[in-house]
Length: 258
Image (cartoon, rainbow, N blue to C red):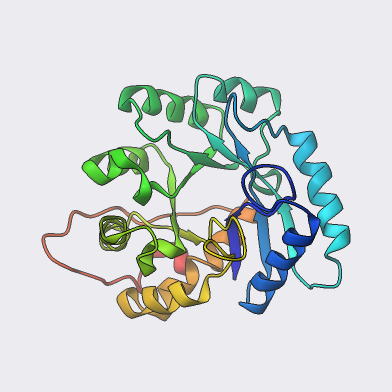
């Protein structure tokens, strides 16, 4: 399994506080069967400044310290979409996922749809593929799922938090996470780990739950085949979203599961 969203870089944001905690989190991930983790510190104007050079340096330091754990580390960032995002992408200040064309993009909590669609359009014009971080937890998406269809139509992929399927963020979030599976709007599952307690870097428990809904093969693709393609800058071909009138849960024929 690969985890494309985890706050493990020591001291970079509200995740691991120091090297000791970071190493402990990586041991937890490895014990859970995760073989690679993307380092995704927050990039939020006025709150967390994590330019690419810093992310690369901290990732290399953690990689050296974690050499005996047996887990691959990949540089990345979680970018809060703002007016500053396009310039950060153009200048190379923003760290994409392992140097690929994929960028983990976080929607602001209460966003203006037209503004966000404009930012997404700018990213796509630059050849960047947004991987939207935990949209099932966003208040706007919880109020109206149509915005996720709009983002998917613009070529964005969706990353759902593993804990959302386990009810860690409440019933409403869990319902939307499951609904995204039904609607074919969920492409990657990641931990969004922040610590080793309430937000640990684990995927296996949620993988078992998702497997009950869409089958083991399709569920595994969300933590293995699709993340691996993203890390290698490969082509991800998501299925066309649907608007189910009832639970459908048939995913075995989806093209990016091959």
